[in-house]
Image (tube, rainbow, N blue to C red; front, top):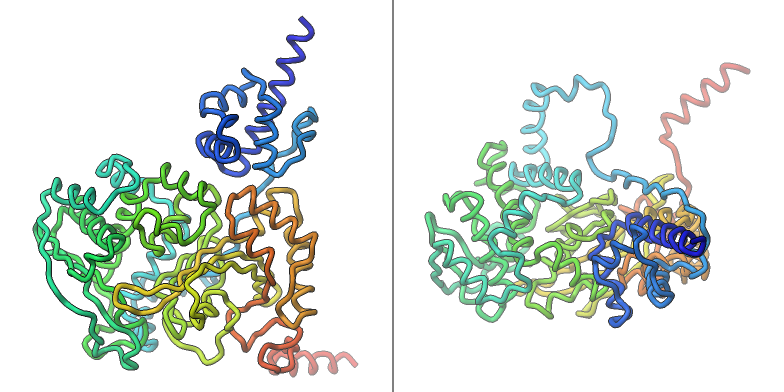
Length: 521
């Protein structure tokens, strides 16, 4: 009888510890089952068996326990210690954008004043109403950490969670929804509004209400693009009944920048409607081609490598954007950059400060960001980087993977997906501030770039294995870099432009302080 009680007690503690580890790392039972099977196909448990283990109804074998220990980077003896840790508190990402900032006095942000000020702001900065609408949508997207379950469900009801979908499958879905497919021939061209003529434009496809989709024959050799464009138009058919209020799907084209004479300085309802529909259809298309559960397992099998879309005819841009929606880890960012540094796509669910070049050009960009360094590369292979981002007194630690490709119009651009490492470090009981300090000190001794100290590297490798993101370990094995939003505020001990660093205060403040100081003597 006592041995039975002992076995039940052992099962309870083991199950509870495994369950807490799984939930702390935001894995479902299915996620953990897949990870176990990846490690050891024969000993990997089913979802139902894992559930029984967590509920104390089964005792895991030592072989299975070692698999789980490897996944969560725990010593095997930790599981036999009958003490329960407090659940780690995962800090919220700090905001680098427009949300979360207390703004006073509040009356300045009244509806009446904003309605007067915003059109003037757009006119003076050369920002179009549609650009501003996209900025608002991005803030909404970041606030919800790129999770929109209603759009997910709508897409899955159409695609029946089939993964992967072939181009033929996507055409079949379109036809079942009553869409007619027509083709046109149009080569890439230079947009007259693109003043420097550096980018080509390709009209990929467009929707003709009520039920016709026109596809450019240039996409016939690009199944990943055909699938995405078709899925995008299927979204319009399903979500908006194909009413025709859509912009054409375009690759390349004029970059965000100064407004052209034909564009309005005001932001009307059409700007907002078009921008929102762009977002809705894009998200629906990604969910249709990459249903959440199946795609999450696919990412896990390939350790979140950014270039895995080639295996199943999906574009890298789609893979990059979808990662942030399906990963159990919520602290993601991504950029899609075009030369010399314009950002076409931006998502900052981890609050990373926005680098230069999104809606205007600056003269002093920080060239040490991985996404910008890759713009000047000729390599087509993915590259990982660990970065310390110093923004004033605030230091953060990021890891990303970037890759350089060409869009359908033939323009080179760089896609970059990254995560904030601090929440992951703290969640595993490591001191993120201490790790950042070790890496930053090493980098400053090396002039801004240096090998990561061994202790910090081991912690990063542990976190990378737990998250199952392969490029964290790859980045930790390389030199880390100190980055900043702009070179004029370079935080390196040795300024990257050779200037003296001193964090100077505004001279007016110093004058006032000196006067007050002398007044008391």
